[in-house]
Amino acid sequence: MAERIAGPEIERLIQLLARLPGLGPRSARRAALHLIRKREELLGPLAEAMRVAKDRIVTCSVCGNIDTSDPCSICADPRRDASVIVAVETVGDLWALERAGVLSATYHVLGGALSPLDGIGPDDLNIAKLIGRVAEGGVKEVILAVNATVDGQTTAHFITELLGPCHVKCTRLAHGVPVGGELDYLDEGTLAAALRSRTDF
Amino acid sequence: MAERIAGPEIERLIQLLARLPGLGPRSARRAALHLIRKREELLGPLAEAMRVAKDRIVTCSVCGNIDTSDPCSICADPRRDASVIVAVETVGDLWALERAGVLSATYHVLGGALSPLDGIGPDDLNIAKLIGRVAEGGVKEVILAVNATVDGQTTAHFITELLGPCHVKCTRLAHGVPVGGELDYLDEGTLAAALRSRTDF
Image 1 (cartoon, rainbow over the protein chains, first blue to last red):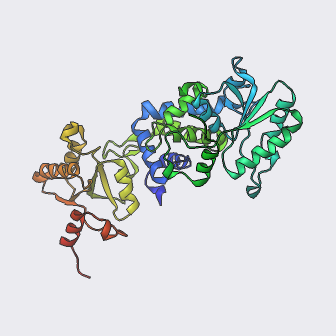
Image 2: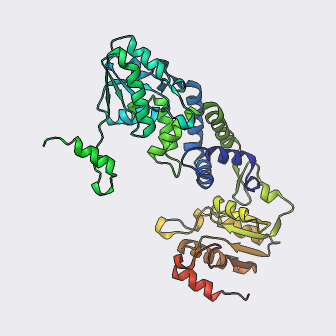
């Protein structure tokens, strides 16, 4: 039905925009109109930025991060503490931890979590390379910064067992009340964890 | 702060994506990661579709629609009834009416509505060209399909007055209960209009 409204060029733009997460068919149409209205300031630069991203972005062969250089700028940064590796599920999680700005460690992007139901096993994740990095020596701690989901925690336990022979310290993120969070809206599991891990004033 | 998380190429992509309507900084990051993950199937084609759109889409000199040809495919279609002009505020409204598929008329995109508060006067809109099209003759009816807002209705009245000397029929969209709408959720104004314009079974 929608094919006859605008020319095929506009329809193709709308269809591709609708495949972005967070945009449906209606908001993709709004986005396309916005782009066409702002042809010079937005449509041109965005097309160019996408072309550059497509041509230049590579996956870091050390940690699995994405960047325009390999090894990525984090792995290549001599000020980073290479003795601490933060294992995360996705690049988005890596960015979130970088925004927190607490650590100056290196990362390892697993590419997801173990999920027997979805058929995701150890070989589908970037786990072997993590074990290899630790086995090479020089690593003191692996922080398993995976999601607090069943799949995430399963993955963390699996990796901890694999790292056993390496005698490296494995840690995980603390559970507790989110900063700014209201107790009334929190689930019992989080409240129980926050109570158990309570700290002195 | 965000500049140091990823390379400048990725940051630029995220910043430009965040300027799309419906995407904020967080969803722009998710969209960028999704694009980079689907480099071949989505990022490349979308960059190319944007480049094509930027190079080829023009505004129709007759009606103000956007298309890759001028006059646009609607104005150039001989099967369209050129004696009926549907005046709309935006190209998005034109698309919405085309999706309804009731009319086979031509359009005129005003480019917005009169809004004294926002400093939008008659000269900022594509009104003079509409009057010109009607004055040339051959037009029987102008349907003022503007939004049911104060600005939209003001614009409709303004255009109706300008068209007075042309002796053309000016009509507007019916007010009433939206199809599938529940009375309980409708405002009083809509219900009053629906009652006043009630029709026989």
